[in-house]
Image 1: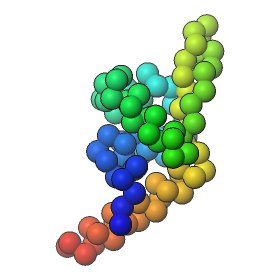
Image 2: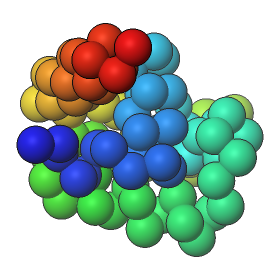
Image 3: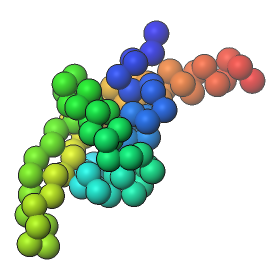
Image 4: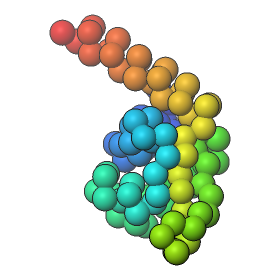
Amino acid sequence: MFDENIVHPKRILIMTALFIFREMTESSLVKFTGISWGSLSTHLARLEKVGYIERRKSIIRCRVRTVVRITERGYEAYVREIEKLKSLFKKAL
Protein backbone atom coordinates (compact mmCIF):
# COMPACT_ATOMS: atom_id res chain seq x y z
CA MET A 1 0.00 0.00 0.00
CA PHE A 2 2.64 2.56 1.04
CA ASP A 3 5.98 3.20 -0.66
CA GLU A 4 8.50 2.02 1.94
CA ASN A 5 11.15 4.16 0.27
CA ILE A 6 9.28 7.26 1.46
CA VAL A 7 7.04 6.28 4.37
CA HIS A 8 9.79 5.83 6.92
CA PRO A 9 10.22 8.40 9.73
CA LYS A 10 13.61 9.68 8.55
CA ARG A 11 13.00 9.43 4.83
CA ILE A 12 9.68 11.25 5.04
CA LEU A 13 11.48 14.08 6.87
CA ILE A 14 14.10 14.22 4.13
CA MET A 15 11.51 14.12 1.35
CA THR A 16 9.38 16.78 3.07
CA ALA A 17 12.36 19.12 3.34
CA LEU A 18 13.20 18.56 -0.31
CA PHE A 19 9.55 18.90 -1.34
CA ILE A 20 9.48 22.33 0.32
CA PHE A 21 12.91 23.63 -0.73
CA ARG A 22 13.51 21.52 -3.90
CA GLU A 23 17.23 21.29 -3.11
CA MET A 24 19.44 21.59 -0.05
CA THR A 25 23.00 20.87 0.95
CA GLU A 26 23.57 17.74 3.00
CA SER A 27 24.63 19.92 5.95
CA SER A 28 21.35 21.87 5.70
CA LEU A 29 19.43 18.59 5.69
CA VAL A 30 21.27 17.47 8.84
CA LYS A 31 20.32 20.73 10.57
CA PHE A 32 16.73 20.80 9.28
CA THR A 33 15.88 17.17 10.03
CA GLY A 34 18.07 16.45 13.04
CA ILE A 35 19.23 13.23 11.39
CA SER A 36 22.86 12.25 12.01
CA TRP A 37 25.36 12.38 9.14
CA GLY A 38 25.74 8.60 8.94
CA SER A 39 22.03 7.93 8.99
CA LEU A 40 21.37 10.70 6.47
CA SER A 41 23.89 9.23 4.08
CA THR A 42 22.26 5.80 4.31
CA HIS A 43 18.76 7.18 3.66
CA LEU A 44 19.93 9.45 0.83
CA ALA A 45 21.59 6.47 -0.86
CA ARG A 46 18.31 4.56 -0.76
CA LEU A 47 16.32 7.50 -2.13
CA GLU A 48 18.92 8.06 -4.83
CA LYS A 49 18.87 4.37 -5.82
CA VAL A 50 15.13 4.51 -6.57
CA GLY A 51 15.48 7.82 -8.43
CA TYR A 52 13.70 10.08 -5.93
CA ILE A 53 16.69 12.36 -5.36
CA GLU A 54 19.92 13.36 -7.09
CA ARG A 55 23.17 14.41 -5.42
CA ARG A 56 25.85 16.55 -6.97
CA LYS A 57 28.96 18.31 -5.78
CA SER A 58 28.93 22.13 -5.93
CA ILE A 59 31.26 24.88 -4.85
CA ILE A 60 29.50 27.05 -2.28
CA ARG A 61 31.40 29.79 -0.47
CA CYS A 62 34.74 28.41 -1.72
CA ARG A 63 33.98 24.92 -0.38
CA VAL A 64 32.79 21.75 -2.04
CA ARG A 65 29.33 20.81 -0.81
CA THR A 66 26.96 18.03 -1.76
CA VAL A 67 23.66 19.40 -2.97
CA VAL A 68 20.61 17.12 -2.81
CA ARG A 69 17.71 17.74 -5.16
CA ILE A 70 14.32 16.05 -5.36
CA THR A 71 13.64 14.64 -8.83
CA GLU A 72 10.34 14.90 -10.66
CA ARG A 73 9.82 11.19 -9.95
CA GLY A 74 10.49 11.81 -6.25
CA TYR A 75 8.16 14.80 -6.18
CA GLU A 76 5.32 12.79 -7.72
CA ALA A 77 5.93 9.80 -5.42
CA TYR A 78 5.93 12.08 -2.37
CA VAL A 79 2.61 13.67 -3.39
CA ARG A 80 1.06 10.21 -3.88
CA GLU A 81 2.20 9.06 -0.44
CA ILE A 82 0.94 12.21 1.26
CA GLU A 83 -2.46 11.71 -0.39
CA LYS A 84 -2.54 8.11 0.90
CA LEU A 85 -1.69 9.31 4.41
CA LYS A 86 -4.41 12.00 4.25
CA SER A 87 -6.93 9.37 3.20
CA LEU A 88 -5.87 7.08 6.03
CA PHE A 89 -6.21 9.88 8.59
CA LYS A 90 -9.67 10.80 7.30
CA LYS A 91 -10.81 7.20 7.68
CA ALA A 92 -9.44 7.09 11.22
CA LEU A 93 -11.41 10.15 12.36
